Structures are given as C-alpha cells and as structure tokens.
Image (cartoon, rainbow, N blue to C red; front, side):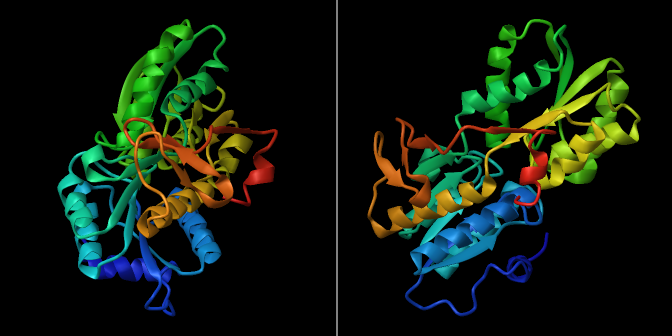
Length: 329
C-alpha cells in the first residue's frame, strides 16, 4: 500500500489541498473510499464550493488508493496526528473504522459519515444521499420498467462490506414482490475496481445466458458493466442500470447499453457534508435525534433516532436529458 505521504501528494495534485490557508481556518477532511473515482472527485468540488462560501475552511481531500478499511484507517490516523477539526468520511466498512474514529472524537475531532455510513458509535451523524428505501426501489424499478413481462436480473455491487450498497440491495429485495416476474439470479462484487467489475459483468453474462439486466448500485461498476455488454455484443439483450454519473454514462446511453440510470448530485453531497461538519464543529448545531442541521443552500437535514438524515431523492437520467447533465458531473 502506498504511504500516506504519497496519498496526500496525490490529493495535492488534484488541487484541493490549499497551500495558502490561514492558521485560523477550520480544517475539514473529506475522506473518500478511494482516490481517482469520478463520483468522489465531484463531491470534492462541492466541498470546495462550501469552503468558498464559508470563507474560513480548508478542505483536505484524501483517501486510500484502494477501497479497503485498512487504507482508510491509515488515512484517519494521519488526520488525527494533524489535529484536523473535522472528518467527513464515506466508509469502506461499517464497523472496522469505529475504533479509529472513536479515537478521533476523543481528541475533539468532529466525525460524520456520508454516502456510505459508519456504525453509530463511530460518528456523530450520517448523511444519506437519499432515503435507502427509495434508492432500493429505484434501482429495481429502472430494470423492471424495461421488462414488462419479467426477466432475470443480477446485481454488480462494490465490496462485500460496503455499507450503502448492502443496504440498498436489501431494500431492493424487500420490494421485489411488487415487481412480478423479476428474478434476482446473482449478486457479485467488483470492489469498485473497473477491471474487476468488468470481469464480473462478463462472468454474469456467461453464467446466465438469459440474463436481461445488470443492476450496479456503484458508479464504477455501472460503467464497467455497460462496456462489458457492448464488448459482448449484447446491447439490446442486457440492460445495464443502477447508479452512475451522467458524464461517465453518456456513452452507455448513446450506445443503448443502458436505457436509464439514477444518481443524486455528488457535488451537492460533498457540499452538504462539508456544511454539516462545519456547523457541528463550530457548535452551531448539535447531532441528536430529531435535531436539524444546516446544509447551506440545500436547507436543513433532520436526524432520525439513529442520527441519520437524507439529502434528496435520486434523479433518473436517460436519453431525454443526458445531454443536459453530462457536462456538469
């Protein structure tokens, strides 16, 4: 694994570690599942937007080079040593990060999770990009809408321990009885690596020759699966859907490998996470059941009994609107 110093160097080349920050600036670390993923780079733009509005914030955008809990633990330990003011993390593992994040909170660092959650004892609150039941229903509906007579679908997820994907898949399974004839044949994992996700998609089509759709609730997996469908000559036979970025999925919509997909705005997600971390670290808001926390231009998030809140509903992209959004994120 690369040293953390090298990871910070990678973040610096991305242009998000300010070299002119004031000593009085609040330092908020946006810790992502792995560097080099478009979804998280878009979230980092939102974090910088929030920092620009607040005026006294330095964003440290960082993460490991692969989607492992061990990599994130190394990153967190370094941030603790740097005595950052807040950590906003999209977790690679629900439970494995808890001891290290508890140590951060004991040192007075505000800790929130966003996108992919940490167990409650390891954070002060969690920001879901949308409601988990709505996302679970949406990813299945996108496949079922194009299978009026039913059909076989498979899921290509991120890691086996990825908090958000596992929850969305569980929610999807809960609503499957509402979609008669839809049959889930397999769930496989590409670890949010393009090459592995591509191979897993190939394997699904080989193992299930009558497969009608691949549902990928991950922005890396959905692009890889769409390319695998194109390369296999199965456009029109296997529809790829799930959660993806318009900029990365425009080609799949154009080729017909994907008829539609959904995503919230990752720029807004990074913006909201930063605003929440700032308000908690400043003491302007408190993370408690029923509390509301400011999210700047996005309004407020209301926390449930688990100190979890949702930002917005997912939005569907298809051939009718993809050109409008593909140049934005």
